Image (tube, rainbow, N blue to C red):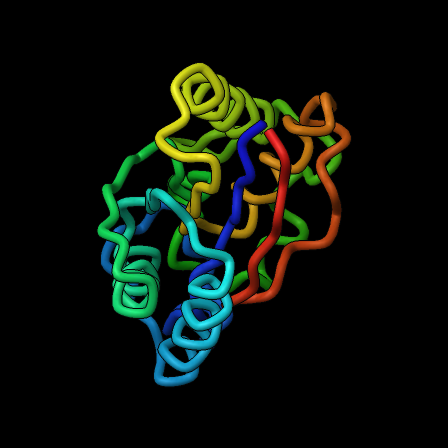
Length: 178
């Protein structure tokens, strides 16, 4: 069995501004985000991961850098751990999207984005590869809220329609057994 420690990135400038981030690559952490990342890193160091992989989006990489400093564990990046893509909606205020996004249809996606079903399939594929060739008994994955929710559903054997509704807080660690 492999233990997964899913670290959600610290608060980003777009989290603070209430903007839809999705897979926008350049969004950095705020000062609070760096504090949250340092807190998660200190907690992660106590859990002693043997390997660490991060999303290749800047906010996750910045968080992983804090985790590397605390654990001494280098990390690799992968696009498989990116947030759900929201295409043309990225950069828009989240509050404007309640009437645009069909939150009840797991197959709905914005133009140029990906659906919850596609996110779930991407995460399931990555976790399947990880399970087939685990790099360590305890693996830290530095990633994003929707990606963590998809991983929770995959590990529970559920489809995208059963993804948890609650998104983990910025700078939190979610433990799963694979």
